[in-house]
Amino acid sequence: MLKTEYKFGEVHDLASQLKAEEDRIQFKNIFTNDNGGVSLLAFKAGQKLDTHLAPAKVMVYVTEGEIEFTMLDKPHTIKTGCFLLMGERVAHSVVANTDAKVMLVKIKS
Image 1 (cartoon, rainbow, N blue to C red):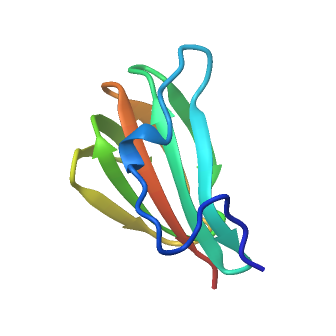
Image 2: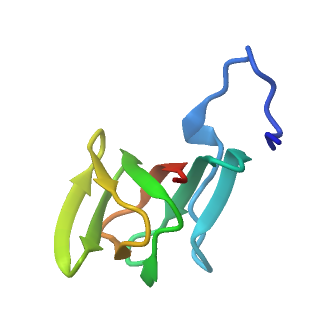
Image 3: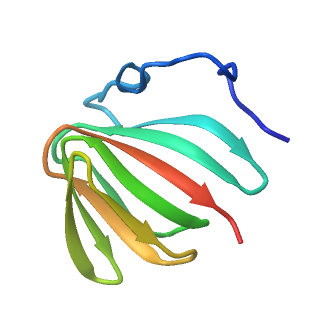
């Protein structure tokens, strides 16, 4: 079953969906279902996600700013407009080099 607060056929401004906060990384699901979904994250510079496993195959797309995305112990700098693909159950971590917004597209096997 699809879960979303948005209506299909309407235009939404992606940049205004989240704003970075000092106390924690902001996270918002755009839509989800049993096969995955699309989520947004907003980071303040210096915020990080510790190493964890990807719950699905993921496209990590930076819509604003710059992050250091470490996957399988290899760091990747991802800037605005760039993306990286990652397999399911892959260990990774994230550090925001600047204030940043990231869209995740998740697809489960």
